[in-house]
Image (tube, rainbow, N blue to C red; front, side):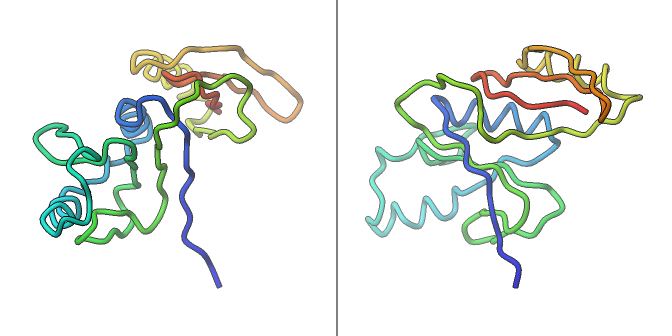
Length: 149
């Protein structure tokens, strides 16, 4: 049996992080507005738990991005495949990630990809050259490390 999964990333600004990672990966920001509107209409969720972003209702403290080719639930907007969920937390990031993403651009596209990601708000931290390969270590706008291989 296989399991559906998502990677959850703590964040101080989930919507900014989702926008960065959607653009970085070519993913889509999930549209949960139909579910949110239904829950608000039923009185099952408070309006204070939502925001208006780009003219649609979103959860204030949660937003996910999903692969555009993967299935999703039309009623909720939630992806059923590759997803990153950003959740608001009160504390700032203070130490190195224990888990990180590797973005595979390939050796011919690595430099261009690093430049593109820096234009989106990433910061290059260092370059690594080991017998097993070479890659760049970057940080997203909130300081979460990831590698471009």
